[in-house]
Length: 301
Image (cartoon, rainbow, N blue to C red; front, top):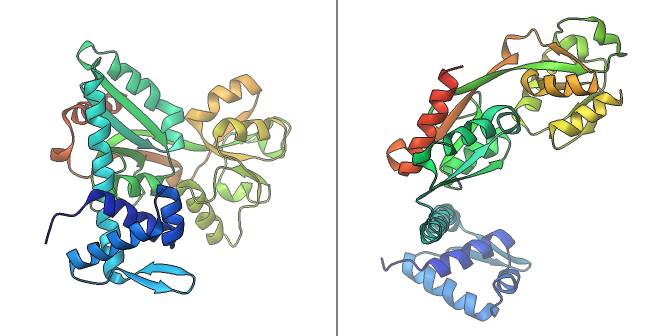
């Protein structure tokens, strides 16, 4: 097989994602016939049809789906190479990208990364962080979007290597005048008659809560769905709903807003986080240093 052309693979991925040669051509600012020619050459190179032409567009064949998965990995690797080389050209000797959940970002990660960067030997390392829900963290690491991920260890980490990070404890946050405020601790079942404010329902915590509620024959009623903890705390402060939030995140807001933080009693409310990556031997030197630092910081707590 002849060498695969990265430009052609990028165009092939765009066609698969848009299901249209015309739309892919518009995005790439080239004519559709040029893409068609490249796709024909690509099919000739791999020796099998990759796309099915339909009346309303195109769709990948099974072989095309397989190639698309490989192409995404190759393109992500090429992007990292370009980014890393650009970083070296600017005088940065290492660059690490982290995907982490909202809880990790809000609780400890920023402080741990700041401590890492304050070490004189690490001054030429750049660390980029992006917030995602646990399933997307794992998917991003598998697809090569980032080298290091940090998420709830209940996520499906099969096929990845991992080590322990920190832990937290889920709690119910309520307004002082709320009927539940008289309690010191709560079970989830005690909260199910009240409306909740939550982060996106696809997040790992919300999926867990819905399952736990279903075992009691109930559902969690979401009055408000927000994108971050601060917004959730503002809704609770207005006494519009209650919220399940990590105690470690809630307590600073509770002190400021005068809210009540009531730990959940269920065993699953105590969560541990994991640092995950595809292969430790494949991590850059900078990423290996950061992973060891984060694991050590967690072990010191």
